[in-house]
Figure 1 (cartoon, rainbow, N blue to C red):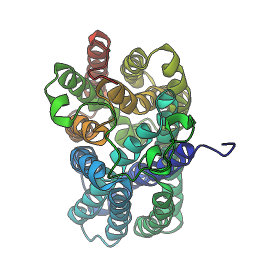
Figure 2 (cartoon, rainbow, N blue to C red):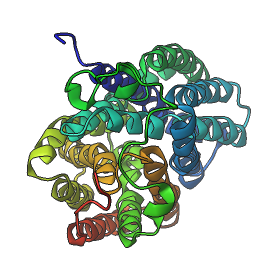
Figure 3 (cartoon, helix red, strand yellow):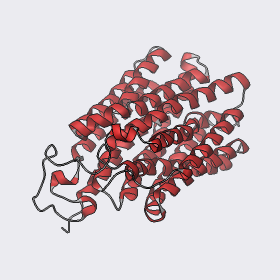
Figure 4 (cartoon, rainbow, N blue to C red):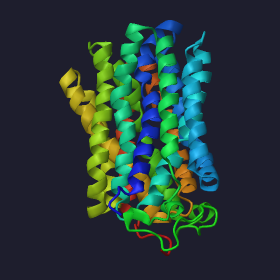
Length: 409
């Protein structure tokens, strides 16, 4: 019993899964200008490459979640990470922006869609008392991927080319993803353990297929509750603006006279802030209440977006990126824990995946319309302020929702 509780190994594996998937996805700002120049495309059109990928990976959680509940997380996540690698490798051979759209967007969309929800839902099964902390540590993989991958991609592009950069990153994703999948286990009962490292089960390991379902609602039962749809609306409103900085902050910085490298580093600072948010807000939320902390993270995202148009130099933009990342990280860390607190762990993957379909539509709309607004008016001001307002409205919905669970433990 002096050994490390295996749940923390699962957290580390989920961390690696998210580092690979989202690191690959959030390297896109480094490719934004090279792709635009190579294919003589508008900002709205290039933005669509990322937006379509993000739409798919959030929408597909509604499929990958139930599949992971039925088949276990390892085959579903393994398939997803293979698709991430294949999409990047295929994009390296693209001869048109349409080919990039098909290869990168579909590969990345399927890949992250089949890996993220099963990975974060698996963590929920291993923890109860420390669920917020464990979720926060796992999704720090997204933050580290956002910090590391855009500058690495920019370095590879400058040293080789954008095509060779996609090829190198695709191979690296395949290798690291394979290691992460090996370490995953579906739940503590399958290893004869209790959640949170509370000891051994008296009968030893329980085969996954014969162990009883954990307490909670089925997806069909959750869909009948008004609070599911309120949470669905809040998720969607918040995420209209969430991914606009990921796609457009580097281009915005260049419009202010900064270099492409500085713009890419600003996106990395969003990741640094998000890592801090995931690390700090998870344990704090376990103590003060995950619902209020979740609403505060959404409200903070709106406030930070409202300050974005006031920044034009590197330091103010860096402070914006860090502050926005902090709030974004809190939202990502707490959304699975808040969902399982409310609906239980019985169909955690399915419920979380279905909720994320609202994020899918918001992600398709936000960055694409922001790019279209810039192409039409030469400014990001209007879409940024709209995004700030939707974040604040989403936070208000969460604050007004009753927070007692909807199931018997």
